[in-house]
Image (cartoon, rainbow, N blue to C red; front, side, top):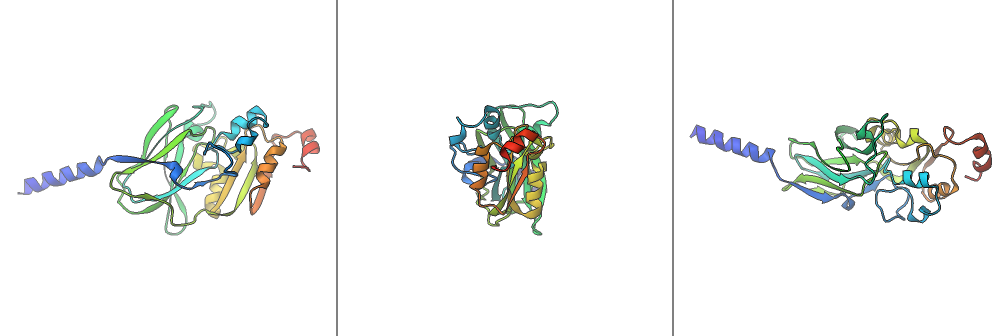
Length: 257
């Protein structure tokens, strides 16, 4: 009898360990860190109207999802992700996880965000289990998106019998976000993973939504960017363009910007 009980427990443990993962489209959950909704591509930072107006380098960088994060809650014992990057970028001076990976954080009872783990990319199309073997308790999560690439699609995987729902806690607070404009330093270079971009660190510390409009090497006071920024009902605007803009560009554009 004891032998059969042990076998049954073993099989039960294996069933839990190998629970089937069901994927849910991340577009069903709140996306933090966007300045505008006037675009067809969910994970891009500029409105579609700027495609033929902006300088090409600026437009291409706007398709990076720097500073964006998905909020959700789940009681799953494991969290997985799968998705596709549009560019499959790689940099010699920055980790692939920072460039095009994903970063998961969990909200603790004291209102602080704790790092869980990263989804390390392997190519243009990626699939990874971020964490497994957790107790089946409901938790609030924040999933940070790539800093120097974007997303064509993204799905979040949980146990087949688990729930995945909208967040119940309004953290980071979305009313009156902080809007940042600047250079590669702002966009996230060369953070080892998305959660370590300084705008994301500030967002967690303040529990306030931050919008990252950092454009690597291209914070040149383009006036169309100022118009995007001005449409946000923000609490603070942080302008950090000095590392990119020349003295001539600042004299010509700064006051108007």
